[in-house]
Length: 109
Length: 116
Image (cartoon, rainbow over all chains, first blue to last red):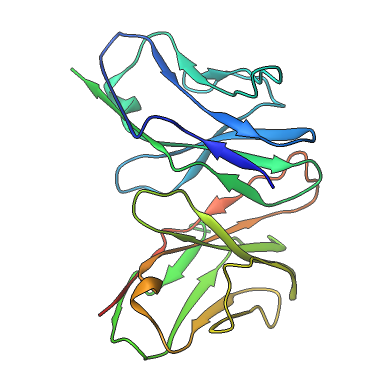
């Protein structure tokens, strides 16, 4: 069975500081990794997926199969980045994601 | 189209009562998913449909839970004989499902259930 671990429940940084939200996974096959975000009073939404290899709102994430990690990074945090972030994994060929417990990011002015 | 909608947004019930939630997916999305989210946890998969067919159910889905999508459009999730442990946010999502590689799930606002 697959598992997603987000070791930090809360990450607090100041505006302009770099951000790294950690995500580790366990899965023996070829996973698909995602980051979802939920802003205050908004719905859960997809932020990015590893196969796209794109930067969304300044965030990037690289799949490191050796370390089984998919950390989310942004060089300069903005106050509007404050939100709940969930890492998720899908088995290859499956439509069903397994979510981590989430990390709350707070960016102080 | 305003996205995935769920009704009701909040439900308070007494232990032992039955409750039913409704989810309306984005038009023409053929896949519909139900999740449960408890405090401090990420969403946990419950079940999903492709059109009207229920393709997969989680072991979390006890016999007291049943879901339907009779015409391949809206879906209902019923919980019979509710227990306090059923208190959670119930999320619905839908996706086009044309390709697993590009599939994106769009989530509804959720129904918050409180069992007293």
